Length: 144
Image 1: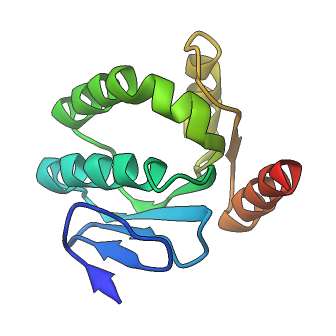
Image 2 (image 1 turned 180 degrees about the horizontal axis):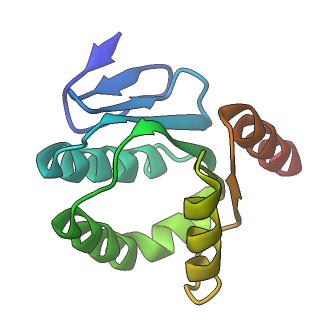
Image 3 (image 1 turned 90 degrees about the vertical axis):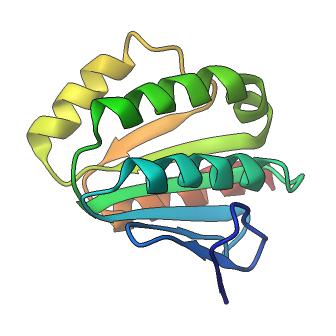
């Protein structure tokens, strides 16, 4: 069942025209970007991700950019603001983030940038959904 409300419920899917947040495997949450993600969809997606961390159970997140395009400067600012606002919640509720970035050049740049950013949870930058799923499952197993 897909929802357009700005919350995710364990066992359900939230969708916008350019983003899907899949909670059917909760506590595994999979976010997929499709095409050029609009700023409006991106902001709504951030609210949905906040709701996933408030369900009460620790989560592992896969962020799959395989079919998505780069975000706007406006969306990147919204992301930085959201990360600052939700940092403590992320630190306590997210046990791992797998960033699926197919492009080797973009993975390299992102990995270097993340060396100087203090992430509130463990993360791994990977080249495929399969590698992201393996990482997320490993993090969930550590929680068990």
